[in-house]
Length: 132
Image 1 (spheres, helix red, strand yellow):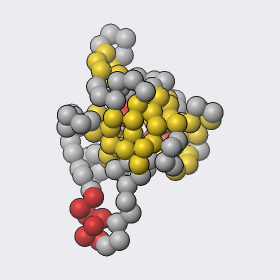
Image 2 (cartoon, helix red, strand yellow; image 1 turned 45 degrees about the vertical axis):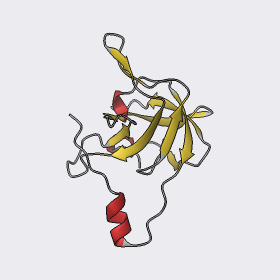
Image 3 (cartoon, one colour; image 1 turned 180 degrees about the vertical axis):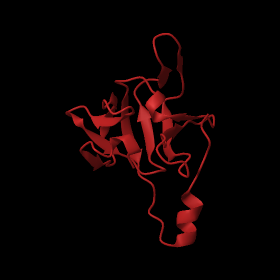
């Protein structure tokens, strides 16, 4: 999925092995793009596993901190319209909105989520969290 503010940006679905970079698309949010095409948002499905080349950095030049090098893409606060939903969940359980990541961080798509075959499996895959 791509965050609501990327709906007017050209996009494509992620594939296993994609090399991605965090990018500000000038729409009020950050997302992922392929380094060879920074104008196209690469949309991830909830449950997509990513590996970053360096520990993930969030914040700006005034206040920055590092997180782990692996994360799972999630969508949070889906019941709240017109807010950021795209997030990364780290191995320590911390979930951070994708729009909070510093730009130009490199990641690789390790694994896409298994497609659910039943409504019960689809419901079990959902993970809704609050990010404050």
